Image 1: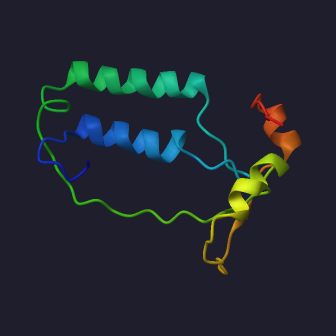
Image 2: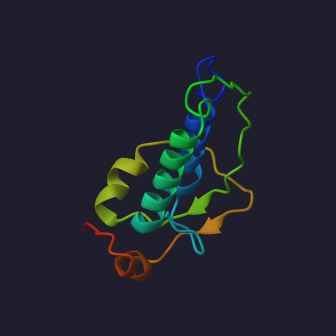
Length: 114
């Protein structure tokens, strides 16, 4: 979408916010943006739109830069293992991060299904 001929600076910022702060694998030391901070960032974008004639209206397409994301080791719950065992995937042998533990996810308020 960044390379779209109609993509404005507003949408570049919004896309970056979504990709960098909202769609996040919960690994050790990595968290999603809080609701309070997200609201603040959206309000900042809104203020910029109100104060600039071009921020949300002038297209500024840019080539997409691929961001490298380290894989995250995760443990699957037993009910899910049956379906996963039927899938054949290549074994990744590079660096990875450890996922948050069940206790860390619960402390964040994330529901952990059985």
